[in-house]
Amino acid sequence: MRTHHPNRRGHNWLVYCAMDQWLERCSTLIRGHVLDLGAGEAPYWAFLTSLGDRYTTVDWASSQHRIDVDIVADLNQPLPIPSGEANTVICLSVLEHLRRPEAFLSEAGRVLRPGGTLLLQVP
Image (cartoon, rainbow, N blue to C red; front, top):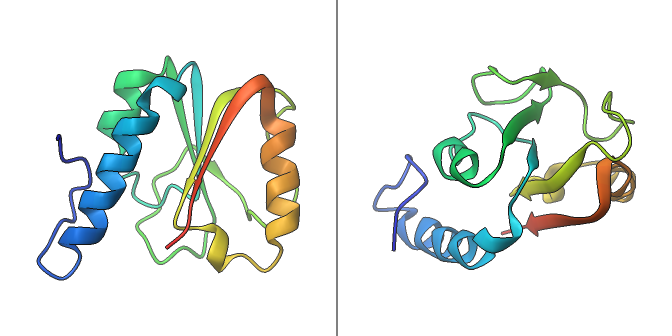
């Protein structure tokens, strides 16, 4: 198994091992334009860019992470992204932090192309 998350430490080793295994199993679903919603510091950048043709990160300005994303947006609000833009939308450990997860899920579906893949993970 490859390791993908750079923040692997003793206290979170098992969580990241499980996440890496899950991402490996999902790797055949990750393709085309990959939209990482709630990307933070984009810890899976190398892995995701190796699978897709284009990788776009999205996070909000008040993130606790260092902000160096392609699009700054509040995931509780409509996204400034055209409909049908992404082949793959990925959201890792973010949904549980949102005030309006139903609005997020609606927007994630809107920005996906028909036949696209939505990969969600919550702790």
